[in-house]
Amino acid sequence: MARIVMKFGGTSMAGTERIRRVAGIVKRQQEAGHEVAVVVSAMAGETDRLVNFCREASALYDPAEYDVVVASGEQVTSGLLALTLQALGCKARSWLGWQVPIKTDDAHAKARIEDIDADALIASMASGEIAVIPGFQGVSPEGRATTLGRGGSDTSAVAVAAAVKADRCDIYTDVDGVYTTDPRIVAKARKLPLVTYEEMLELASVGSKVLQTRSVSLAMKEKVRVQVLSSFIDEDAPAADTLPGTMIVSDEELANAEQEGSDMERQLITGIAADKNEAKITLTRVPDRPGAVAGIFTPLADANINVDMIIQNVAKEKGETDVTFTVPKADLPRAQSLLEERQEAIGYYRLIADDQVAKVSVVGVGMRSHAGVASTMFQTLADRGINIEAISTSEIKVSVLIDSDETELAVRVLHTAYGMDAPA
Ligand code: ADP
Ligand code: ASP
Ligand code: MG
Image (cartoon, rainbow, N blue to C red; front, side, top):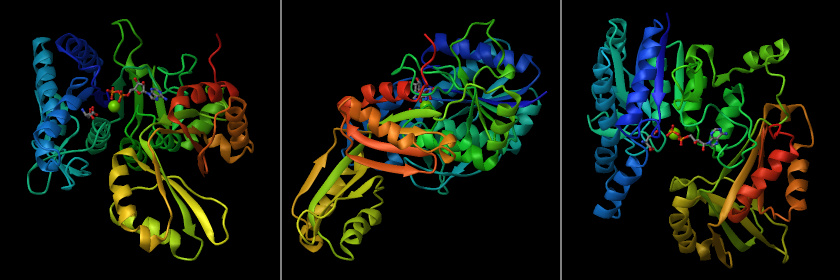
């Protein structure tokens, strides 16, 4: 017997017919002898709909009231799943964020989980009851509803799994695992049996939305065993316990699997991700003197605007340089007005903003021991006439900024260039 937390995303919960299928999967897991808790998302499209209502009600909406509105999507699906499980003869009940409670800080709309009081949940699970928990929701120190940021139900699931000391956290979604790249963009993407926490963290943070970044860092920190698998399965599909999806594993587990030959097909690059949520800002003719760059980035940092890629061009004119960097698209208007206010103090000539850019990244722990990953990337893009506007690297990742119209082409040609295409 094991204790399992199962999470179902929006597409899996989209409507009563799909919820019935989910209930069947949950019931089978319990019949296999396990203690089960389930974390659910709102129905697909529902959170977008609720966010739009908030925008229509007030352009500069109060994040605390936004949370009251958007947390409701998960309340509906948790109640519906509990009802459906009961109709199948299972003992089940819902536990809203404040009832568990899932305690968060008060950063409304992007709250962080601080603590989960799991005693009541554990007792309920041990009694044979299926605990159904709405993802995405928490409760602030003041007792108000909070939400964890878009895609946050993954983090709810991992946090619940850590709190109840689950043996495994199964993240059911609309694809049957983590692929070498988004299988909806590249038909030849291959499913990965194993991905390390570190690789998954990089992939998520550079735009692979299959798992929310925070859920992966939490799983890594709390050593939660996470599997990504599909809820779009027949009754005779292999059971979740046979690990049909992708397991997120430690470096040691990966090394052991490689030694045993069970992960032979691994390439130098594990995955490719694309992100269209960044915008580029160039400041021209910035004075080339100490303090000039700090004068640009300090006000952005003070305003909580994350700067990602940065390049400083060789001075064209003596004593002047161009500085280019990226910020989240949503923060572009704020960044622009902060910098325009400081044009004289910084001493730049022009500010050029461009939100038609995309960041394409290749990720893999193999990069640590192999040279040439970046040059393959640059050459492959050059061969297709794709211009690179900025570059950033980490130990296991190379990212380039390109024109957003060329995103899909870039991902496809890189996938082929690194030998990752599935056999035809
Ligand atoms: P859910 O609603 O279940 O949380 P998401 O839409 O958040 O599902 O995440 C699943 C989607 O992530 C897939 O449909 C797929 O298009 C996308 N995706 C992006 N990169 C990858 C990848 N490397 N492997 C698998 N899926 C990916
Ligand atoms: N429903 C929320 C969203 O769409 C949370 C989630 O599904 O993970 O962002
Ligand atoms: Mg998701």
